[in-house]
Amino acid sequence: MEESSYTISNYNVLLAIHTNYDIVAVSFCPKVETFIGEVPFEVPNRGVWKNGPGVSFFYSLSSKSLLKKFI
Image (tube, rainbow, N blue to C red; front, side, top):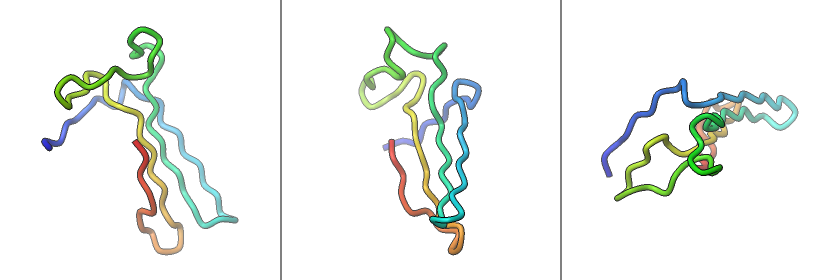
């Protein structure tokens, strides 16, 4: 699958640091202005997103490694 790029200006970026749990969460949530028919992102057309999906990354603070990625 070809890697796509989306402008960050279409997203709200959320950062949460949970020191008690050794986790950092970084999420990219589509802005309301980019919603299509009250849906945060459209159904992909042949695997291609117009506005891009939301995505969250979870990292370990101690090992500085990616733990999980949610799309």
